[in-house]
Length: 79
Image 1 (cartoon, helix red, strand yellow):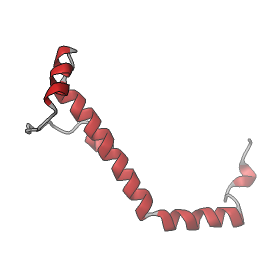
Image 2 (tube, one colour):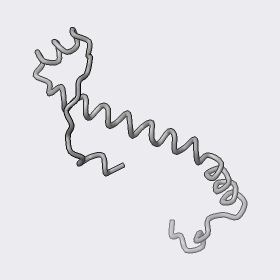
Image 3 (cartoon, helix red, strand yellow):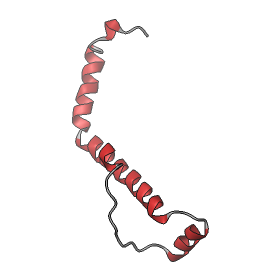
Image 4 (cartoon, rainbow, N blue to C red):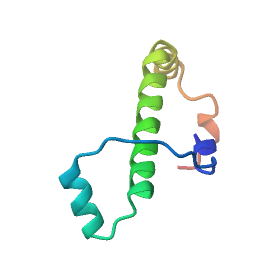
């Protein structure tokens, strides 16, 4: 998801709650930056949520294998 961090900006139109927008401006908030950061965080959250759902069977199988057989290099662990 790192590729999202440095992507070029694109102008868009949004409909926002007018009172919230007014208060944000009064507070000196950068609306574009704030929305961009919050939207990016939500996209990342949903991406990994979907990934976990799509891969839950593989993760469960791996965890079951580790529970049964142990970690492959466990004998080399120093902790």
